[in-house]
Length: 151
Figure (cartoon, rainbow, N blue to C red):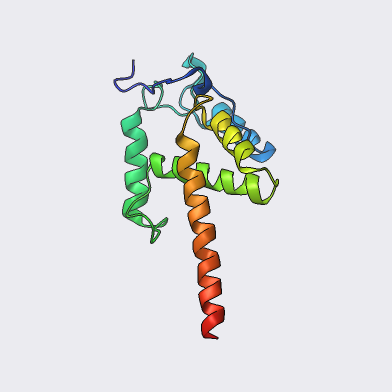
């Protein structure tokens, strides 16, 4: 029924997302009590429109536009927040977490990123995030080195 359906690009695009117990319990509460006429809903989508159909991609962008208009999530890096920006932020932060907290080597971190983000096993997308990570590390070291020189 959706005019703009989400695209499933690869077999890896169907994936499970781990959530906290608290979020799970709140989602169950939402489904049981707050979701509109939930007894009439026969699809697996959590968020619905007024007619109980899955929320459209355009409606999701409307929510982000409202958030951007209020300005509560402003960042010096972006003019506005979008689902795409969140995906980039997630991918970069996950890579950094895997390397710095779990001590994964770069190749293993890239493989995990491919798996979690639903990319093909040979996808070059992780290179974008590893490049940014290395760039930020290098700049941090250079700033520290230059600062020490002038102190």
